[in-house]
Every structure is written in structure tokens, then in C-alpha cells.
Length: 105
Image (cartoon, rainbow, N blue to C red):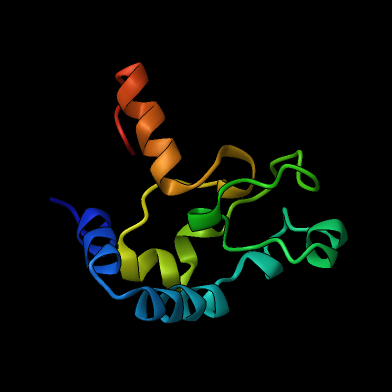
């Protein structure tokens, strides 16, 4: 089991209020708002923390430079993917790799 899977299991094992506190901590540490892909639409709609919440459906429809792997959240919980704002959450991208038989970078 890798770090991301261990992190998810640990979070899922918490009581609901503890889980909420942990997710809020990660959300507050998130660097999405300073990413080159992030824009004023996403800021005004309070969109961020894409690695866990999933992609932007309303605001971000392009990929410039990805800084996801430099995020403290990514390092702490073992995130491997990138471009979460356009490609979906870590879990969604991993699932797609399983479906298509591709390797996770």
C-alpha cells in the first residue's frame, strides 16, 4: 500500500468532525490559488483543493504549468498525479489508470 492509500485509510477512519478538521487543514495549505492555471473565475467561486475535490467544471478549461507536485498537501499525503483542476482528483485519475491499464507516473 502506498502513502496516498495509507493517508486515505487514516482519514476515513476518523470521526466525521475529525475528518472535517483534517480536510480543512489540507484545504488551507493548498496552493491551487497561486497556480498559473487558476483564474479569477475559480477564485470568485472559491474553487481549489482540486486534488481531493475534483476538477473545475466552470472555470478552468486549459492547462498551462502544473505546480501540484510542489504542494505541501501532495507531499504529505503522497499524491502522484497532476493537473487536478482539469483532469480530476487523485482518486479519479488513479481509477482511470486502472481502467485503461496505464501506469501511474
